[in-house]
Image (cartoon, rainbow, N blue to C red; front, side, top):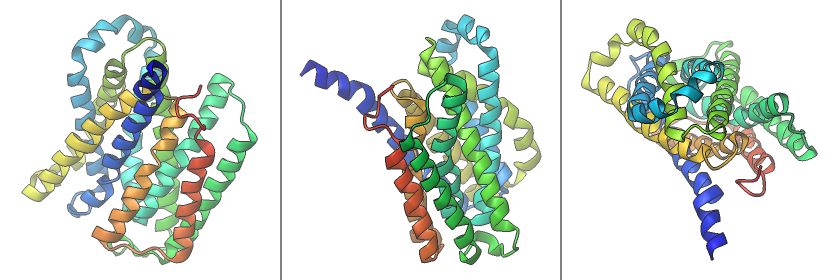
Length: 307
């Protein structure tokens, strides 16, 4: 019984936290469509920028308690913060160009692959046949989504030939930066920093980096209550609350496991995009979605907390 409780309080609880965070994140693309006059750069800056500053405020005391460790690993903190700043700009721009479902699947679907590569390069962890199978499946699925996206309905009537390929490239950039800040936060936590302090430091600094972008692009957020509400929701719910949950998860599972589990976001986003936004993907697109999601089951270790 004690062993079972330890497992529930460890890897399984960590997986639950990550899935909960991913469910909140999956609402962001659909919510953003309710503020069409707000640019994707402003949406990303207010969501991750303000959300990151809230993370720092939430973690003031833990950051102070772990200041010596954080200062000693400032390069890791800076790397994570830079990734935090780039991620939302690439992610929301990707969704703007190629649609909520497609943008989310490419962005989040590529993150587990990027995480595995980072762990291989930084920690010398072997790439197994199972990982290679998952990588091929995920990349092939993203390729199908890119091809099928040409006939998908996209917000704002974007029909230019370059929109979908550009959106996919930005989605891949979002996936890589997501993997980078997840790995950086996990390394800090593994090095003795509490999850609150690690997330607060990385996301707080990332939020500071996003403030100039918000200052330049954020005026439409104040032009109507609807726009303001969308911005407030983004910062408070998926970004602040979601990343608190994600930090708790990273304290219990590997970064590659966490990014794999976060593919749940693609399911939530795709369902909401179809049901709420009215987007449509052709059958080939849904096959791509299925392949990306199938890669989750291949890439995720059989035990969520295995190291």
